[in-house]
Image (spheres, rainbow, N blue to C red):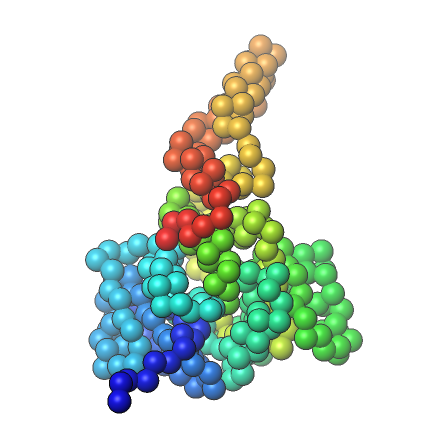
Length: 311
């Protein structure tokens, strides 16, 4: 008799970089699931034994090692491409420092099948200890960003339907195959931070939604944020904001028009002897020229077409 062929199940992708402190909890939460799940680890150059531990302890996990650090988006794209090729109906992106509670993956998949208008679903995010909501997640689900969820939590109401949300980070995204076939993968113009914001902009352009499933939970053990130039350096923050604004297919911002407007504004300030204001506008214009390269605009136009863009 030939080997039994199993229907493709959900693929879980974990991008690792020195992830030893969380490896067992992260992978264990997936291996303990009651449903079929194919696990793929994409390692971005770990030096703490993560690769060796995956090989030795988890032979059932597929491991891909990159030649150098590709960043979050590009590394996940490797896994997303493999998941599509395997026929996976859903893909779970799970941070290396995150782990699902029992039954959460099953609930996410079941909810996705019942609500096809949602391209991405996320569980509720707890901190590592599980004694409170993740701080950033609390911000994502404020009433003006995620209507109804806070009220239902306070009043003890249970709702099986997903709560539409403006944004939730990619620490635990369940992505449908339809979404991947329509929106594609992560934009390589965003190497470090901003990838998830850009992806959700593109998702909305194609008429899909992102939602929170209140009965599913993930621990995200990121602790207190340390100093990070990607968040603390005003120039890097502004560059990322500009890239996101001009990459957004919902807005169609014109780079040439924006540069002309800033140049006119500079001359206006100079003629009125407002030199400080003129310098600020000149700096903004230079930042725009540096951040928004022609390839970004070209990729924005590519993203308007349904397809496996960037994969």
